[in-house]
Length: 278
Image (cartoon, rainbow, N blue to C red; front, top):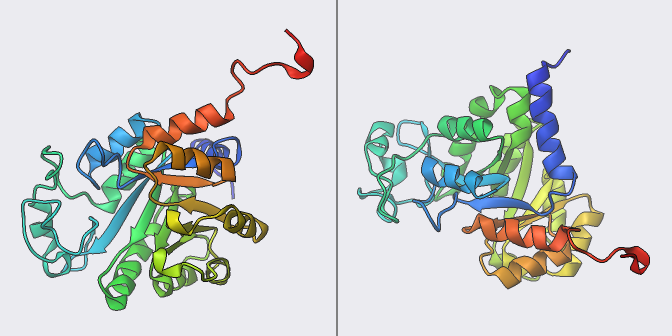
């Protein structure tokens, strides 16, 4: 099959970001949520403006089986509404103002809008499958399948799907073998093996909480062929430490901090020349 030139160029751009010096990748956690309302198109746009390679966002299902981008099970914290996402219709959710903090009017976006923005900006998207129960996660994963299946080749390379619910990840990976997935691990995994479960899922990466990460974990993951994308890191010293340890990706509410730390750590600008040359 002949791949159209514009698609091939998009694929090559993503591959260059992943493989050639863009390490660690900067994932804007729920967008640039330190500066714009989280999980909104504004937060995603600002994140790309600040130099993020990718945005991370949370996908859930409405009562009538539509997908929306929102983190909490309740809309109360991030919108002007009240109630459970899973008990509200798509129309009800879209009517809410999602610009609670900082106070900037925004709508709850759809995955389609989010992916369109990422493609326009030349960035990547980490979709985290959410749900308050295993059944809700499974339903969200099921609804994601047609959305992801319909992506063109270029967008497929831009999307990474993650979840704490590994059964939901296994389900979606089983239906879409080409899908890039990352296995999320919270602090409850302290002292437990995270590499084995990720390999069993066919994941390309582990997404451990920062508290779980040691140099040894990164080495073991790399030896197993897994990337290590760490969440959520806002402290500049911690960002620099994880870069020095060889992290492949860092999630942050302040994406520019990762971009700056990466540049400081990897740039050759002004460094002394070999052999003491002047």
